[in-house]
Length: 145
Image: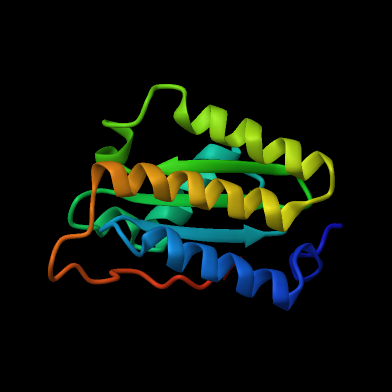
């Protein structure tokens, strides 16, 4: 599976977008998913680039979370902004990646992504609960490179 288009079906993408909506419903935090075929860069460095390209570094409370996937490389990164990174447990992103990887190894890519999104959403809701007047600052749609 090397093509971005073959990674998830349209239906699976819509389920992921809905998971983002649900995860963001009770928080001011922002979650995005970005999928691309490959990267010639260190995956974490590329994820940071995408994080900035998607304007995730511009959220008011620095509470954006990016799930970045380089499909052909079989690499993925979870990238949180300073606000969320400062409050979650030190091993939170690694343990979330481990849970996602279990699903991925079983071929359940959609479920692994949904599980990661919902886990991040729980932490965002805990530390950045929805306040009156909060707006959805970023699109919930999956971006592709």
